[in-house]
Image (tube, rainbow, N blue to C red; front, top):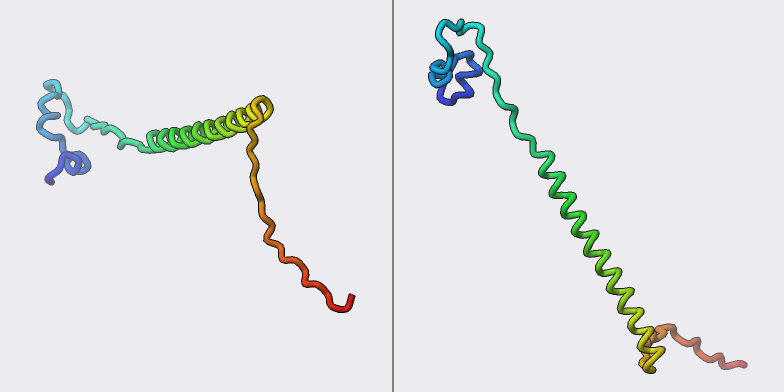
Length: 101
């Protein structure tokens, strides 16, 4: 038995705990309670919530910036005559002309 856990599982009381017992204590009736192993569920869920919240905040900021930019362009075009246009070229092919008509 090399580790204290092995001693506790085998029912042995380590020397440092044995010294802490009051005199006259029946060693056969002692129950040693170990601390439960740490649960990592809480920190993992908290990390995922922080990441999700950060992404949501960035998306809201991007959406608000888009609305602000669109309103600035509309105000400038109405007051100063500045225009913003998007040219969309059509990639449709024209039908070939018919010979008989």
